[in-house]
Structure formats: structure tokens, C-alpha cells
Amino acid sequence: MKVTWLGQAGLLFETGGYRIMTDPYFSDHVEKLGGERRRVPAEPAFQRLVPDAVICTHSHGDHLDPETLRPLLKNNSGLQVLAPTEAWNILRAYGPGHNYILFNPLTEVTLTEGVLVKAVRAEHSDPSAIGVILEAEGKTYYVTGDTLYNEGVLRELPEGIDVVFLPINGAGNNMNMADAARFAARCGAGKVVPLHFGMLDDLDPERFQCEGRVIPRIFREIPL
Image 1 (cartoon, rainbow, N blue to C red):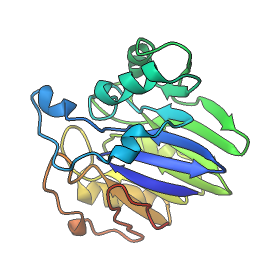
Image 2: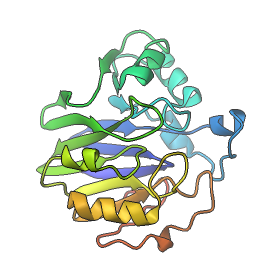
Image 3: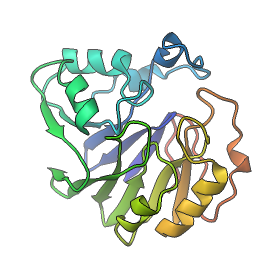
Image 4: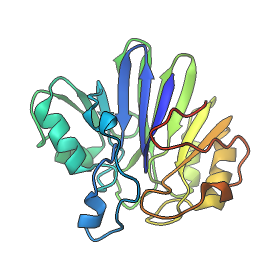
């Protein structure tokens, strides 16, 4: 499995020629909404890339980015597009010819042979927000999406998580570094990849102290 960090909370998973994007954010949409400006320019090669599947964990503009996703879905066809209720209703208007899958907690979808994704709970200000469990090549990857530390979320996770990707910015109803470290320890992942830093803030990921920590570099493969 090759995993590339796309910045903010975005990831690209590649396995057996199949490509899955989660929460791609290639524009400066957040600044247009009155938020922070983008601090790292998008990489054109990834902007042009057409994945086989797109998963949006919730409806906020840096996870469901209309300036990234509307052109992708308008100009291509045949994608599998997975999202929880609020995000799903938004995405369906962006372009016909795709398989829009309602991806709420406890839903499981086989995307292609050997690749299974499962939606799990998240505790966030979008009440329909989810995390994603991805199983492929004998390993289990957990993308928390935006979430706070929550015992209910932890209780519902499967055993045997190999890698967890989680926010550390401590703003916008996300975990701070201390809570992210506690969360990672509780879910038992061997490798812990911090996200949600450096794109809209100057947060230093070196301050995130956690066993198994792997700090990603934007638009580079994460060494897992």
C-alpha cells in the first residue's frame, strides 16, 4: 500500500492499481469562507489525478472542497463517491455518472477485490461526520477524520489497527496533541500519522509526542 499525504486531512491510498482519495483539498476555499489562507500551494500533478474512489468524511470546506471536487466529478465519470449524509447530499449535485454511496457508521463497502472500507463514528461539529477503516494488503488503516477524543468512538473501533491518521491541531472540534496521543495509544495502532497541520496554521508537528509517530511530508509518500 502506498499512502501519500495531500495536505490538511487529505490522503491518497494506492493498492493494486486502485486509487482512493480521502478529503482532498487543493484550493483556497477556506479563506473564501472567511477562514485562514492556504500556506502551501497545491501540486498540479495531484490536482490532475483522477482516482477510482473519493471518500469525504464530512461536509466542511477543507474536507468537502467544492473547488476540488466539482471539477473532478463534472469532468470525469465512473467514480465511486462515498460520504455520510450531509456531505452525500452536497456531492450528488456535482456531476452525474458516478456511484454515490451513502457512507454512514457501520456501513461497509468492497471498493474492489481486496479493498474493504468501513465507516465509523467521529465526534465533530458536523453531526454526520465519520472516520474510515480501510483494509487492504493484510493491513488495517484508520482515518479518524475530524474528531475529538471520545470514549464512544474508541469503543466501537475494531482491534488490530496498524496505522492511524488523526488531527492534532486542537481547533475546530479536533483533538489537540495531548488528546491525539492518548487516542492513538488507546486504539492500539503501531504507527501514528498526524494530520491537519501546516496548511492553515504554523503548527509544528515535532511537538506531537507519541509512540510510533510518523510525520508526513506534503505530496510525498508516507514511510509506513
